[in-house]
Amino acid sequence: MLATQRDPVRTFVPAALLLLVLGVAMCVALTPAAATTLPEQPPVDTGATAWMLTSTALVLLMVPGLAMFYGGLVRTKNVLGTMMHSFAAMAIIGVLWVVVGYALAFGPNVLGGWVGFDPGLLFLRSIDTTVSTGGIPDLVFAMFQGKFAIITPALIAGAFAERVKFRGYAIFIALWSLLVYSPLCHWVWASDGFLLQAGAIDFAGGTVVHISAGVSGLVAALYLGARRGYPRIAMHPNNLVMVMMGVGLLWVGWFGFNAGSSLSSGVKTAQALTVTQVAAAAGALAWVCIEAVQHRKATSLGMASGILAGLVVITPAAGVVQPAGAIVLGFVASGLCYGAILLKNRLGYDDTLDVFGIHGIAGMAGALLLTFLIRAGEMPEGRDVIAQLGVQGLGVVSTIGYASVVTIVLLVVIQKVFGLRLGTTAEGAGMDHELHGEQGYGLLNLN
Amino acid sequence: MKLIVAIIQPDKLDDVHQALIHAEIFRITVSRVTGHGQQEDQELYRGEEVKPDLIPKVRLEIAVNEAFVEPTVTAILGAAKHGEGTIGDGKIFIMPLEEVIRIRTGERGGTAI
Image (cartoon, rainbow over all chains, first blue to last red; front, side, top):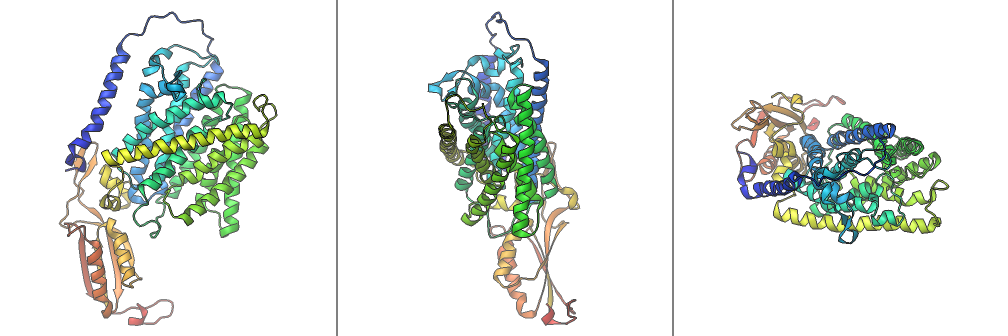
């Protein structure tokens, strides 16, 4: 018999909660919307819309890319369980975002601006036919944003890879998405969000996506503790080939992530695309150079890590820095992340796939350093560098504070109520067999 | 001299390896194998429960001098069990070892182990 059948209460509680939420939402959704005559709306800008549709698909491509990246880095017995973490985000947040996540993130301020809410946006009902001022159908914007909501919790999974239960993880990312991601997204990107109002620059999600995921990952890694045997036993990646393919998909997808965040198809898009390419290349170059100096060898994982550091650091800055600035950011990010990972090994905590070391550190570096590299004319009016640095700092600090506090509360509650940390025997046997009843690499063994 | 061959569960490899190191047995050969003993396993394929005919195991091969036979066996017995012992925990085979030759130097016998 499967392990899940031993514990009916814990199995059915999440399912019942899910059905309850869905049922209530369905009742709301099925009541006919008030027959309003639509106000005059701008014509669809087909060029911008075509690019935003492409960007939406590109950002989704990052999720299987992330699954391959993370999946290749863990041990053989955990490859499927780790890839399932990314794919579970597609399934869970893919539904949750449409049901309520978008309404929380992009509705008008409620509860003093902590989050937004607009009942009309539940199930995306009120934007079925609307077009934004930029000439892009609102549904395209909602789906584009939905991909960011999917990838952010999936990023966190790298910090506690190889040691969590699937059910606890599924509940964690659902609640984290609603209680951490939607508020942060609202603060930074909704028109009445307080960080946007304060003039904080976060072009494509340095704070919302990378700092929040990095910090939450660090908190989770510290709370759940290290994998059994870490760092005494060497734990090697099962498939670096898959890691390289994964990071390649991430780089390609990141053009949608950053250049798509211009929400247009024009000069700003071109600027964002250019610096994304340049920063990723600079990050990769810097990382392999550091390795070549330190170890006399350039590694493939170093190349992949450098690419990722460069992509993360340019994310908040993609709209406001020029190529020279992007090169500086890429170099600095790789140096900082390389140092952060060395420091992690000294400190001995088990942020398994370096979510904080890369996403957290490079995200913070990008959000703060962009102030010094900003393109003439992009500085918010009446600000000097120091004043803007203060505003960027406010964004970073509020993200770190909020994400870490809510994450620790979620972790404690989920660990106590449903169980999150995998037991010793299950961890030894591996997630693939224990949690999913499968083997990632059956063909390598006769069976 | 004896050749000790142990078939163990894959998840116990780390523990057994550590126990062997603790008993000062550093020279081992490890391979992934599949086989079938008393244990029956269960996997899933599109909602169907599947019993694989062959189950993944790990095989250790350790060549030892007589004095190290019991410490090796004790280390493996202590570390390879699940709880009080579960079907599928594995087996240890001990067989006489006729000769050992170190390729680098050509030396033979107990000192070459």
